[in-house]
Amino acid sequence: MSTVVIGAGLAGAFAARTLAQAGEDVVVLEATAHLGGRTRTNREVLEHGQVADLGGSFLDIGQDLLLEFCVEHDITLKPEIRMFPKGPDARYSGASILLGRMVIDETRVDDADRAMLAKEVQEALDAAPPGEKETLKAWARRAGLSPQAHAAYVMQGAFNPTARAELVSSWHVHPGDIGRICWILADGTDTMARVALEGLEVRLETPVRLVERTGGGYRVHTDSDVLSCDNVVVSASVQATRRIGFDPVLPSWKVEALLGTPLSQGGKAVAQYRGGADIAAAAGPSTMTNGPVSMFWLKQGPEDTIIAMGTMADTGDGMLDDEEATLASLDRHIEAMTGVAPERIAGIIQNWTTEEFVGGVVNLGTGGFARRAALGAAVGGIHFAGEATGEWPSAMEGAARSGQRVAAEILQKRRAHTDLTAAPRS
Ligand SMILES: Cc1cc2nc3c(=O)[nH]c(=O)nc-3n(C[C@H](O)[C@H](O)[C@H](O)COP(=O)(O)OP(=O)(O)OC[C@H]3O[C@@H](n4cnc5c(N)ncnc54)[C@H](O)[C@@H]3O)c2cc1C
Image 1 (cartoon, rainbow, N blue to C red):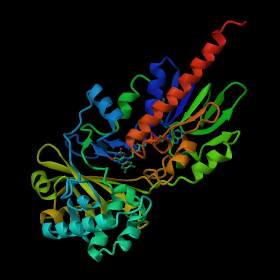
Image 2 (image 1 turned 180 degrees about the horizontal axis):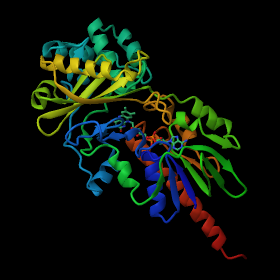
Image 3 (image 1 turned 120 degrees about the vertical axis):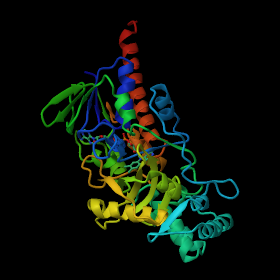
Image 4 (image 1 turned 90 degrees about the horizontal axis):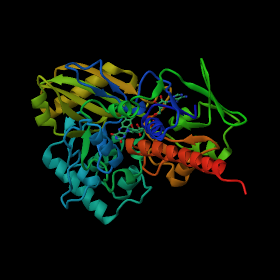
């Protein structure tokens, strides 16, 4: 066997697929019982065969590798959703996000108030734009926003769940290069990894414990097996990579990069309701809130059902471990939008903070490109993929591209070796 890929998330799936297509022998070892990693989809809990995406769900404009992959493999994308409207001057910005539907303290902010808040924020953005690394809170203070505009501006940071929304860098919402046009996968986000891994050898519930260098290659240790190979692809999150043993130990620059790269913390809540048409009409494509569900969006299903999916920051208040309390809060947010207590028929929440083989949500670009380069650099025949390792920051596209990158590294090395051994001796 030539390559062992650790992890069946998008990075591992795209690495394995690219290698296999080039004729390499590949085995994928996945710690959990699921394909897709942080694009996990639950198919058991919701009624009418509806799927619950527990991790990544939006393919945003610019995620071209994955969008093309979906088109090529007949993976159905739901029609485009504009999560956030354009601002008054046709820009997407921290202010235009505020033009979307909004619930603060479980009370709907009416349209006139929202427009006032957005105007106040837009004027402040024009007068004193935030610095690239300035946090939402720091800028809101510097700009002298009113208390309500401050609250509304800062709560946007929790949209891509993070423990301390106010400490997210302004870069994440201004300029708003997120949520311009998004697509959701009709059959669940994990469909991409499932399709990419079709026909490949994948061993589920097989956590890798140790990667050991031998004379000419590597031995990969699981609880029940030791696999020998020429190359290893590590596609686990930074948190999960820290738990894998390496013998000899990884060089200090790699360890420092792994230790210095935080993941945001949080999860996802998904609830299914009756009365879908009324909820859709009142709530619009997406609603921002000041928690515990930071933002939710809707997907209509059969028989007038509707699914609300929301991201949750882990603020340490225990909500991510309290399914009923979290779903009840989502109910109250829907009620705030519609004026009627909704009839919930199913629900599920996913805590990524405590997920053993992930340990968080995403790397929010806090590392900078120097750290990304160190995270992605190979150590001998050990190649590192994953959303935190590529130029594309912290998203499904970044993960998939990083998988292709490590596959190219391995194939190039293989070609160079073949050329060398085939070269005539002079
Ligand atoms: C709640 C949430 C919402 C998100 N929303 C979006 C979104 O809307 N759009 C978007 O583009 N991105 C989104 N993301 C981010 C996106 O899902 C991730 O960036 C991407 O899926 C990461 O893929 P990956 O392959 O790098 O890592 P992972 O998906 O973490 O895959 C790594 C795999 O390695 C396995 N593993 C770890 N350790 C071991 C071991 N020792 N042995 C064997 N296997 C191991 C893990 O179980 C996992 O399956 C979201 C993420 C979350 C959690």
